[in-house]
Length: 426
Length: 160
Image (cartoon, rainbow over all chains, first blue to last red; front, top):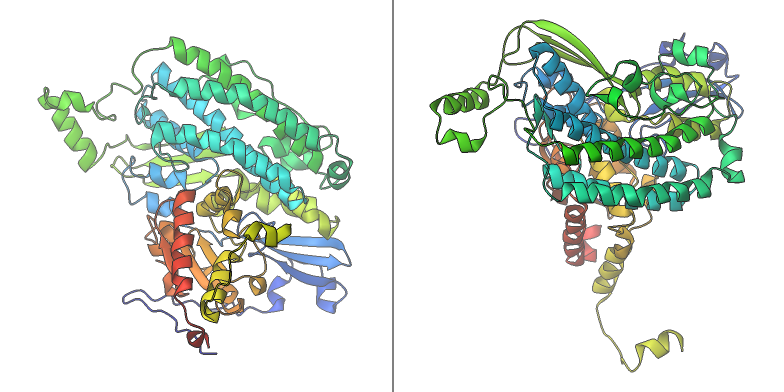
């Protein structure tokens, strides 16, 4: 069999070297028993069906029991934070979409919130409502993928097919508003890219009328299913104290019974005016985290329903009228010289933010997603950093939960924490 | 009854071994369960209910490279992932095919920086490029059908 040639493109050479480390480098990461051969070191990933992307875990096993679990991340490190420094504030929004690719609207939101906080930019009420509505739709979307893949890992194939069926409806709505199914870049500093189209409200209403019955269907399949209960209850337990100490947020923290939701604790975009509950678990195991997310489906539908009612009543601009940050509508360009100047300035060099730094947090489907934005007064970010829930959960919570558990339960634990490697590595 | 009854009086079909094998190969391609980033989610959508990749005999995604003959590189390939990807490719049995799904895998996409390999064709030979960020499921299906066209023209003599 002839060897296929390695393709080299001129100018670019992959220049990749294999890792040439030694076992001694693992000193301190795994127990001393690993070096005497008493326990076994096992590599899991980065190509593994249950690691939700390219997570690599180094497992130390004593028989079937996990003695220690060392995550090795960075297989999806994209340099997003660095690349954002080379783009104008508005261009950099496209980068945030691709960070946590199951929560693109949420990433847009936290970045736009940071800009708006630093620029003291107003967001009209209509835009706020649409933002809340779409952020909650994104939460449902993300939880649906989580549910599908988590069940797939545990051997329940049909739930995956059901969940993806419902997800297509949400993606159709995203496509309707932004023209893209996943990477929408719909939220812009000061509001939205454009107003929602006419068919938006009927489409969302059709979805929220259809969806609650489907959640019931998933619950019938799973909540009282003895096979599901056997594989999830009492697995991967993390106590409330540990969950806080390890920096868990979102459903991972709430599964342990800690009532912490950024939407309630530090409301943004008018979340304080919506009626919704924060579902809590009790035992901190895989089942409770699963149960919390199942309840969040219903709470999100509740929020969407309220937002829809408000949206029907609220007319007005969909983005700020502050021309220093927000481009004028195209209709104005033919009439107003000032509008042309603003348009030209915004689309050539972009707007500049006042010097300073801000930190804002939102509740992403996975937990607390924060953005640190530092500006030196120029038109490009001086530094952008994201505090992403997946990173904290991968490095802290998963090894803690996996320790002293069975290796067969590890896929359930990874699934229940709902990590996205794009979110983790960025 | 059965197949004979359904077929009716079709008579005899003559074909070449090559054409028969290639036809069979296009109808039962086993892709590797290998997702990297955002495109992997669209790849999952392609497999799932609405787009239903099993219409093309591809519902069985194998996690092991030893059991698959199609690698769909779905997502951005980082420099840390690149040797792993090449190793997976080397482990696949011949004849094997690669679809580069999405802009990042095809050319680096919007990420022209230190971390991302500027096109997976720097590491493995690519048969079909699918554009899009991420490509819609229809686009991926089109890429797969394009690959089928390519497979149908292959000759047994060229494999070895």
